Image (cartoon, rainbow, N blue to C red; front, side):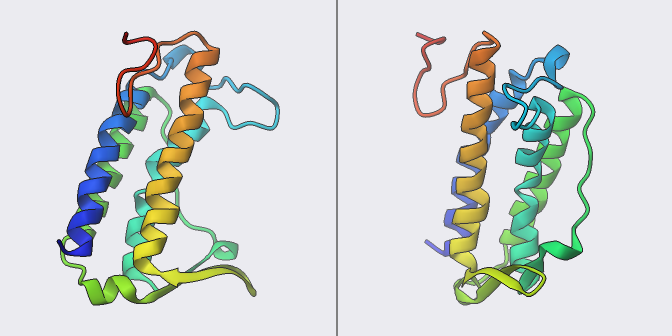
Amino acid sequence: MALNKAIIAELEHEAAGTRRVLNNLPEENLSWRPHEKSYTISYLAQHITQLPVWVVMTIKHSELDLSKGFDRKKAETKADILALFEEHLATAKEVLQNVTDQEMEEKWTLRNGDNVMFTLPRKIVLRYMVLNHIVHHRGQLTVYLRLLNIPVPGLYGPSADEK
């Protein structure tokens, strides 16, 4: 299987779980955070919705310089968050459709000005900075749900709330 097809398949598989978590977001608690150093539910959910955009940045460019910033669409409601996730997911899958294995092997750099944070093959960046990153923050959101006594959906099998 070509690398782009494998990444698309994994992205779609993880998107199903992400949708289940985002669907359980408590509209009335979007500004809640478990600790003063933690993100709010809204910010964390929006961060997750933005991560598929990294597919586009990774495929279309050879690097990203965080010191220059990048545009982030804002979402005010749970419906907006879900719509933004679907929009970014569709764009990511579209960009991945025509990427060759050779292009997936090309190096990509994340920097903050002169500080190079890492240089890795695009295929690793997609796993590390997109897929794993989504799973990580989605896991954080499930903890937020648990702390608010909101049912946690199953992701890799049924959750305690679904048994």
